[in-house]
Amino acid sequence: STLHIRAKAQPDLLPEESNMVRVYDSYGYWKIKLHKSGSIFIENLLHADPRGFPAWLVNLFAVDGPLATVSNLEKQA
Image (cartoon, rainbow, N blue to C red; front, top):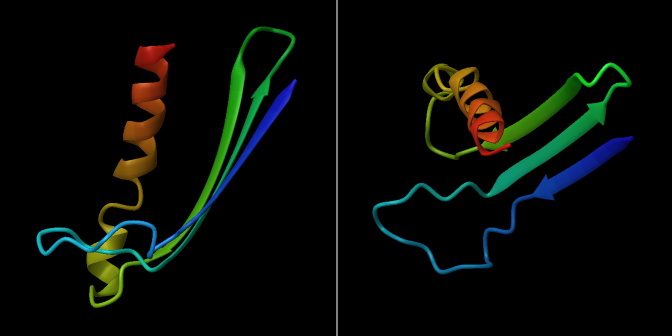
């Protein structure tokens, strides 16, 4: 079986906070598939534009963020 999850930024959902960075444009997609062997395949795609930050700085966190998310999912499972 396969689970598909899609997420899109909703920047106007909550009021802005001065100590937080508002991401105005983002789209995320998760595909989680359980194989007959019992192993799990996870595909994750994320596009985000935190306006005002240089791409090189944002890219420093591009690998660590998804890895931490999957690690935390594993701990909770």
